[in-house]
Image 1 (cartoon, rainbow, N blue to C red):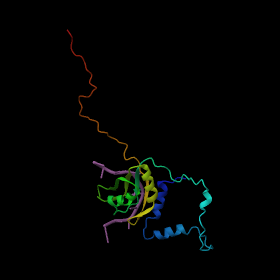
Image 2: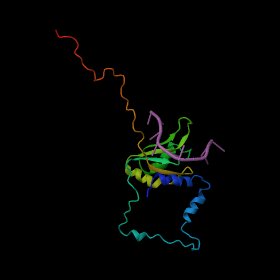
Image 3: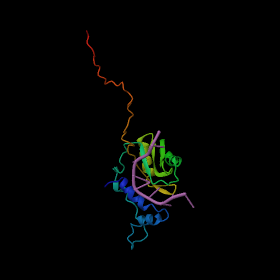
Image 4: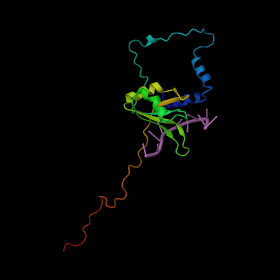
Length: 170
DNA sequence: GTTGAGCGTT
């Protein structure tokens, strides 16, 4: 099963209406009871994993940079930084702003010092509330394929000049 | 004065 942005996109639809999201969450938690069952909640079988409870539930990150979506349009860099700061050393926390409208796009990026901290923040902050909205954390993709590394086009004196020996030596 | 897809300006 693919546990990735797809599922996040699905959940985000359910969590969109903040005021009416309670019914969605309630339906999620009430799905165990089929109706004719008592209100007694069965304890979780913690010993089912035995002594070898090693589940690869969390794939390792390949980048210390995280993509945070679902942000409120009131959430700024500082808010993002304040929310992700206690989980590790943030090297950068930025929300993306639209240059045309001048407003926040509703998602941002956080970059930690190590992948380890980024993983922790990922687990701790994914599908959590921030500024009244449910945010989703995912590994960030590389920013750009680096299209133009600035080659000097002014070099008319490039090292490709064919040194033509003109003239006769005699 | 925001209501919602998505991966960024330096």
